[in-house]
Length: 204
Image (tube, rainbow, N blue to C red; front, top):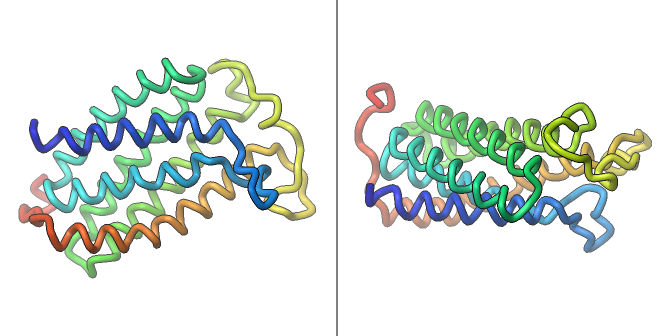
C-alpha cells in the first residue's frame, strides 16, 4: 500500500486541478476558442502513470488509477459540476488504462517509445471521451450545457464552423502531444534514479 500513496495523491491533484482548469478558456494570445487551462495540467497524469508502471509494474499502476479515479471524481463533484466530474472520471479511467496496456507492451523497447506511444494513444481516447461527455449537446442528460462551449466558432482557425468545444478538443489534444514530448525529459531523468520493474509484462 505504501507504493500507492504518492502515485494516488499525484493523480488526485492532477485530475482535480484539471477538472477546474478545463472550464476556463486559455485566453492569452487569442487562443480562447482553441485551448483551456486544463490542457496544460492533465498530461502530468500520464507522467505519473508511466513512472508508476515503469517502477512498480502494471498491477500497481492500475491500482493507483482506481484510487485516483475514485478520489478524483469525489473531489471534482464537490468542486465543480457533476457533468464535468462524470466526463473527467470516465475519460481518466479509460485513457489511463489504455496507457498502462500500451506502456506494458512496449516497455522493453527504446526507453522513449513506451511513455510516448502510451501517452499519445491514452490522450487521444481521453480527449474524445471527456470533451464529448462534458460539452456535447447530446449528453445534456448528464447535466446542463455550458452555453459558451456550444457557440459556433472557427474550427481550429479554419473556415469550418463547429461548436467551440470541438476546437477545445483539437487544441487540447495538440497540447497533450506536445506535453508528451516535453515530459520525456523529466521521465528520463527520474527513471535513472528509480528501480525498474523486472517482472515480464505478460505475467502481470
